[in-house]
Length: 321
Ligand SMILES: NC(=O)c1ccc[n+]([C@@H]2O[C@H](COP(=O)([O-])OP(=O)(O)OC[C@H]3O[C@@H](n4cnc5c(N)ncnc54)[C@H](OP(=O)(O)O)[C@@H]3O)[C@@H](O)[C@H]2O)c1
Image 1 (cartoon, helix red, strand yellow):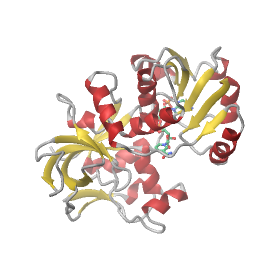
Image 2: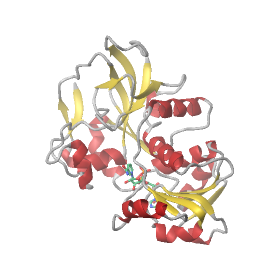
Image 3: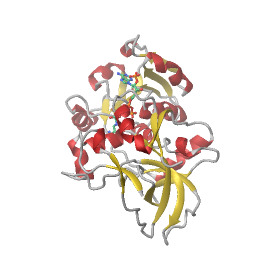
Image 4: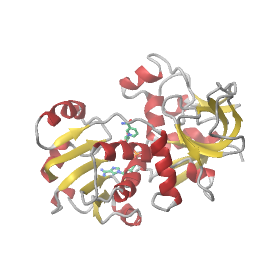
C-alpha cells in the first residue's frame, strides 16, 4: 500500500511517499481503507521529536513506526474474529495517537479504541478533522471541571484545539471569551464565543472579567500573565510546556495551595469522548474548522504549512480519489 513515512526524526522533508506492507489485523482489530486524514501539531511533534520526551513513546533513536496520522476517516474493509461492533462497509472516523498510521491507504485499529461511525451526510474530509483538536480541548476542559455558568477564556481560538475548545466550553455551559487575531474574529463568533478579543488591537489583560478557567490553546501566554485574570480558585492550562518548561513544575506545585492553579493533564483518548463528539456533530453543536486540503502526495507541503503556526483549524489530507 501507499503511505507517507519517515525513518529518521527531522523536518517535513524526512517524510516521503513509499510502498509499504498493508497491516495485518489481530482478532480485536478492524482494517480501514483510509479516505482522509490530517496533518496536525501532534504529527509534527512526533515527526520532529522536538520535545525529546516524545521519543520515549515513538523510539529513542529512530521512529519505531514511521507512519504518522493520528486522525483518520474511511471505510471498514476487514474485521477481526473477535469484533462485534463494526461491519465491513461501515464508514468510520477516529483518533489513535498510540499507533498512528492514518497517513496510509490502510490502517489497523482496535475496535475498542477511539473510533465511531461517521454521522450520516458527513463526508470523509470533514470526519477526519473531528478528533485531534477536540481530544485535547475536551481533556483539558474536563480537568478544569467546567460547569454551567463558569466563565472561561479560550486563548488562540483559531487553532485546531482552540476552535474546538470554544464549541466544547459552550456545550458545558460556560460563558466564553475567545482571543484571536483580527482576521479570525468572525470565525470565533461563528463558533459561539460570547465575547471576542482581537489580540492584535487589544491587550487581553484589560478584560474586566475574572475567569474560572483560562485555556491557552496555542501556548503563547504564561501563567504569570494570566494569573491576575483568574478567580481565587481559577485554573490555567496551556497546550505548551512554557518558555522554560515551567508549566510542569507549576502543575506539580500550585495545586498544593488553595489558590490559583496550573494543571497539565495527560490527555487520554477514550471511546466515550469520540461518541460525544459524534453526537455533538450530529446535533450541530460541533464542527471542525477546515483550512486547507492536500492530496497525500503533497504531505510535505502540508507539514510545512502546519508548522508556520498559521493554520486556521485543521489541515486535511485526501487519500485516493
Ligand atoms: N501537548 C501536546 O501534546 C500538543 C499536541 C498538539 C498540539 N499542541 C500544541 O498546541 C498548540 C495549538 O495547536 P493547534 O493545532 O490547535 O493550533 P496551531 O497550529 O498551533 O495554531 C494556529 C493558530 O494560532 C493562532 N495564533 C498564533 N499566534 C497567536 C497568538 N499570539 N495569539 C492568539 N492566536 C495566535 C494563529 O492565528 P494568527 O496567527 O493568524 O492569529 C493560527 O490560527 C500548539 O502550540 C501545539 O504545539 C500540543
